Length: 407
Image 1 (tube, rainbow, N blue to C red):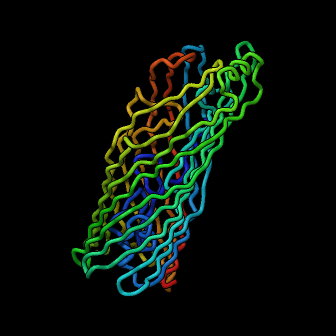
Image 2 (cartoon, one colour):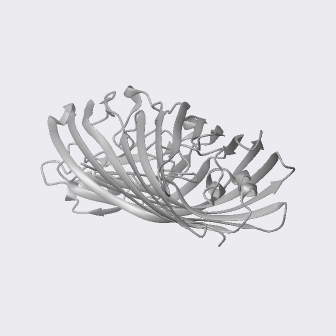
Image 3 (cartoon, rainbow, N blue to C red):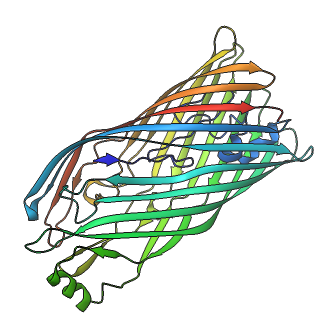
């Protein structure tokens, strides 16, 4: 099974990738109060008020994953063991421009959400899901206002584009499987607000709230290789030309963070977040013996947190170390094969090199442990009980950034 873990720039608690800092800040650290580069336009818009010049950051991230999974569908007497790898990546950018002494403008290209799996055409899960992906891309304009030397506030709007694709096998009794495919997309807008408080020259705190991303997608399932019996059953039930409504909502997030510079040049950051996974929705459906079945899953709100340090080294090099953790947003007996999230640990290390002239390059590495993703589901019609567990479920992310200061 190829586990497609796409880049996420605002979500703690799922496969997530965010870096911040002046100096490398891997491991999801320094999100709310560091506010030293154009990245703050995405993580905490209020922090843009700390930048005295225009700045641009370009980022390229590559994610490599490996999963080893044992799966059984008891009602069909099917089981399998799969061990697969995958590699994915993409570019991002962050830009900040001072408008005057009080206002700053920012613009980011971000990926607020991305999920997916490719279980393969021989997987026992193929009637529930064979391959699927849900990806968000967001253009994020932001504005900050400096109230005084200590307080700044910021707002941003996320213009979100979502694309959803799913492919399932269709059970043809006594004959090879048929196939159902669906593709849908849509656009929505969500909003963020944040605040930054400068306690003194070395210490500050930041906080923010990101609204959920609510989107309704419409799609028409397309069928291939249906047996005559299955086609007649679907036609009689009015399912051959049905329009499926897909509800997709990313959770809202309340975040807060602390940052401090020590006299020896070290920096320390701590961030916490409360993530509203109970608001998450993703319609799941499939077709068996002329029947359309849908699944509705309940998710739980979770806590997540991170901490990290930056350490100046000889010459122009700075070392960054970080770790983050999030609770699982779903109980084991509620998990489905479409969205097998679990608790997440991320361990990161990075290096930044100062090129001079207010420019720098950063290299970051993160190891991500996504948990067992164990499933022991109730009985599903026609399929029976579903049982699965990851023996391996991890990823590595390699990140490269180039920062143009005084742009």
